[in-house]
Amino acid sequence: MPIVGDFNGDALTDIFWYSAGDGADLMWWSQGDADGIFFAASSAQVAHDYRPFVGDFDANGIDDILWFAAYAETVHVTSKIWYFTEDETYTSRVLSTHRDYSPYVADFDDDGCSDILWYKPDDPNLESPLWRCLPNDLDFACEPPLTTPAGTYPVGFGGAY
Image 1: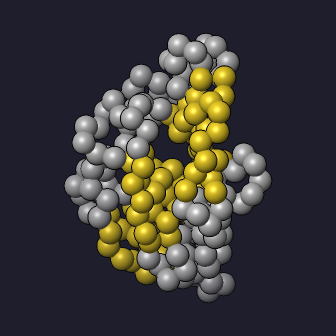
Image 2: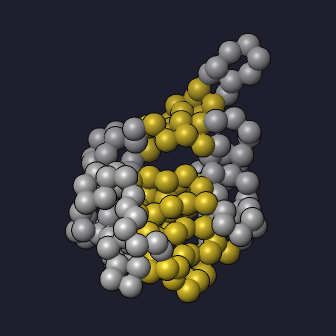
Image 3: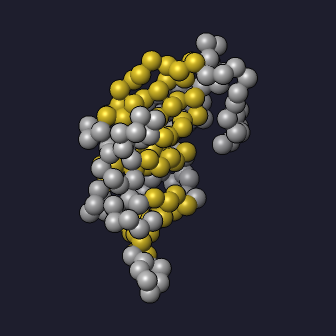
């Protein structure tokens, strides 16, 4: 599965080739210019099955990857965020939701840092948590849950996304 983003902050689109499970994963660092499109490849290992989401989760202007482990589908595997840097490395931070959600990544407060709406359409109170990204902190503030409209569901709810 190709995951696209600018993972080193050079304003070029890189491609992370994710093979769910224990397969080999590859990062293609874009080195294209007016003469053509070129990539430099490096290996990486994600291991396990995740739903990847791209966002800038530390407000450094470089895309990061949220590796979401759906709670109902994955036992003993936790979600994590890879925070990328200009030198084509990343720091990994584990996070846990302890419930099965459909995450939606966006900068809801226009601070340059990607927030996460943890949509839970089958919540009896119609509440979905909202994590507000704290710029430069590698952390989130848990905002009061949002009440979502009744009868709405994400694409693929109850199955694959």
